[in-house]
Image (cartoon, rainbow, N blue to C red; front, side, top):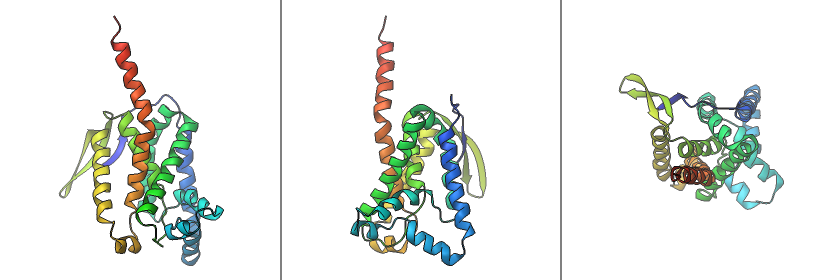
Length: 231
């Protein structure tokens, strides 16, 4: 299932979401301005490398790679998919949390994604890069805050495609189950060293996203229950 847009209006202009998309795109444009050798050197220097970080976790440079790597992408499909998800789901989470809290939320989920991937593969020397951990946190927050929101979704059925309105919790839940299944399959150290998708970055970011918005969700439900008990 590929989400195309949601039908969930916002009250405020999503300036932080748009700024994050702009920063990711600007970084990708810079990456594409480099020749292959310079690009590889850039990835090696600024992408997160678990084995390098775990050997010197207090290094300012290694800490910086945790954040810089969130704005780096490995190709058009990588950045295209991430920015699509951020555009569809980020504006509503920003609207509910507020601009500055949303920025802190986004970065925290990105850090959680990097930490989860490093925990699973602490000795991996393959650079980890991408906004997927942070965006996974946005998806987790959205699924909890707006589970019934309609998401216009492209659904492949054999050689055909159908567009349907699907509740957000199904779209995002399906995505998370895929990440979890693929993550379990990727635990093999040989797979981790070979590179590929950092599924546990998605899982870690998603889990923190849910955890961070849980108090807000509980508060809103409790408030509705109290209001509903008046007579």
